Image (cartoon, rainbow, N blue to C red):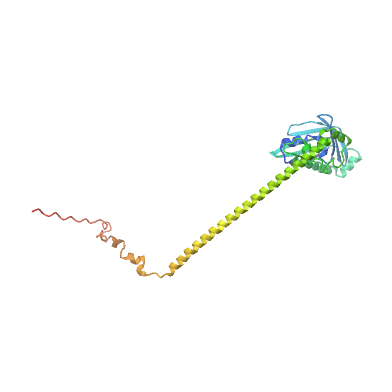
Length: 301
């Protein structure tokens, strides 16, 4: 039994991705290689897929876990089984991992298919249709749980657009109220309105971004101008100080007016000699103030 797997990251919440994947009957509307998925009841379905040749089988659901995984196994036709697992990577990011096991058809056709690389081909179409699924989800309105709301339905590579549906799939679509001419016309009008709103939002966002960048550029220019202005003020102040210093240095110094000449006769010792007559004597007593005895009062006669 051959084993195949494929994975993709969808930019949408986990519950939305899980819910949209369970609409098997809508697969031909956006997948390239699924030609039919019709229901017998809520647990059993019939599938037709084109991979080299056309293969079909009946399947029954099994191992379903809400917002976590879905599984199936065939009960008639091509022997296969599989599981699809969903894992939230964040509020708006979900990983989808598909694992399929199937038995290559017996006989010459199966062996030829093996030699031609049917396994590699199956891997490629599995990954391609998984990419189509991601596009379908990402082009649906936020929170939508119905594939019919997606703008990606009926794209040029879908089985519907290529005219590869089975008669049973066509009949099922004809009885689908969402596929009536009126419903399709309303869907088309809604898509046009949403596209116009999206273009308007994109235009407004682009204008806001341009305005923000222009304001940031203006602020940078103002800051640069302030830096240059401050640098010029500092340069002028330095120039003025340098010129003043140059002028001062160019004037010859008169020894008679120097501070040293003026202070020479008024040094520390000279300035304190009148108060401390013994200044030059014993260093320990030189600054002791000399008190003179007061003259006795004149005698009374």
